[in-house]
Amino acid sequence: MNIPVVIVDNAEADRYIARRRFSRAEGFGECVEYTSGLDFIQDFSAANTNSPRDPTTPTVVLMDISMPGKNGFQVIDEYVSSIGKKPDAPNLIFVMYTSSDAMLDREQAASMPQVSGYVQKPLRSEDVLHIRELAG
Amino acid sequence: MNVTDLTSNSDLLRAAFHSAPIAMLLLNGSGRVITANERFQADFGHTQETLAEQEIERIVPMNHFAFDPDNRDRVMRILATKLSDPEQGASIRHEDGSLVPVRIEVEQLPTPNGTTAVCTFVDLSDRDTERYKAERKIKELKARNLELSRFAYGTSHDLKAPLASITGLLEFCIEDLNDGALDEVREQIETSLELCKDSASRIDAVFEVTRVGEMLFPIEEVNLEALVREIWHERSGGQDGRVELLLDANHASPIQGERPTLRVIIENLISNAIRFRDTDKSTLLVKIQIRTTPEALSLTVADNGTGIPADRHRDVFKMFRHIESRSRNGLGLALTKRHVERLQGSIEFRSIPGEGTEFSVELPLVQDDGR
Image (cartoon, rainbow over all chains, first blue to last red; front, side, top):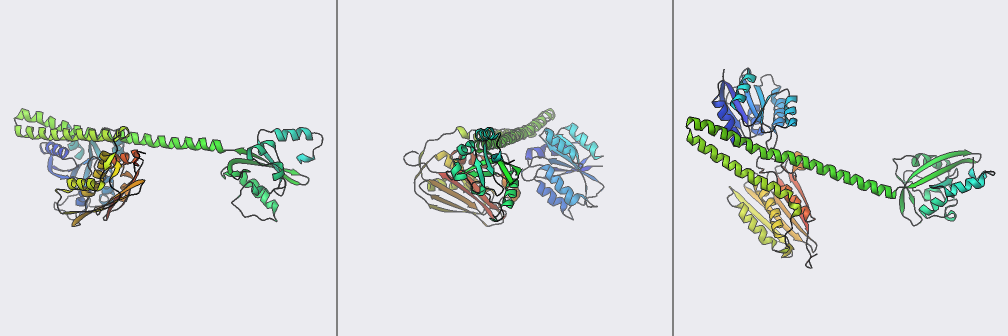
């Protein structure tokens, strides 16, 4: 089964790197990109979206931490509190995507039950394999 | 025991009372002074003559309750409670009229004729000043420490991030070279070069902010109106949609100042006003007002842009805080504020999301005689 991927990152080069890695790996489907958490939340809170989301199919969401406006953790919190609790909410697998190796960031990711993984930039093929396993 | 009634030890006790190394008063049951020791007179300027029979509230101001001249017992009880409370912050009126902060302790002695209160007074003035200075210094150091660790985190993150991107792109280049995909290699290298350039100028910007304290520019004549128009012309070109400047310059001209510094301050304010425009409004309107008094210059830059969300107001002058996606390196206002403060001036802002933002800068002017 091909897992769709969402990339939320304000840096074009980082979106490109992720997009290329996922597109050349097995087991992943379409890649959708957002340049800000705001856009991501707006799109995912729309009741009808262009592509119907089957709540049972997982979608991987690669979430940058450091973005202007709301940071990645704040975006996930907001998503979970507004949409994530609804019964028909899509099954999103959040993976933090960041150049930061800071203990505080790793700890924060570990403390959030909605976050399934933490990947350090730049994204490599091994990371993509690991993410495919997370998605089941 | 009423001290003044003692006979056998009275001389000894009287000597002890007067030579005690702490200011003391004896009050009778109505809160009137019986006697004051030498130290009290020395510390607070009053003499036995001026103090005798005086009501205590004449020298120890008690703002917290109304006096009932017929109920001295009550005054005494309240006095004892109030004065013994270390939180109250008592003071004594010196003979010269000034108020001296003191710590007062009161001990009530039951005597055949009623209560005698033994009061001791410790002058806190020096101690207060030293403690106040120390507390302020600690607060200042804590703030600086916080700023330093934010700076370290911000620098290392903002500078590391492009390196991670460049690493990813170069790793692709190696893979692509193996596959002979030269077009991709070229594109990826070009992107990497752009990122290098951005990074380098970001490092320069960070250093500029940190080095502001060392900067010293010559004082020269500056025509502010011309400077503002020049910068506006540079920054407002190439904007989609209408941009309009309303310049209200009612000031003595030229002024004496540091031209490069004034330029940086005005540039930052104008470029922010232009960058954070509200695309729902047909015209970007920037109003700049310049006023001078003989001592000070006041500059206001107001825009009708998107405004700053209330929960980000505290981040406005901090380094590396990208308020929203149009923020560049998050350093412009931090730099501006440092320059303003180096010149002993002040900068503030007001902002309402959806309506606009107004920055006000006040700078002391250099007097013509170079002061």
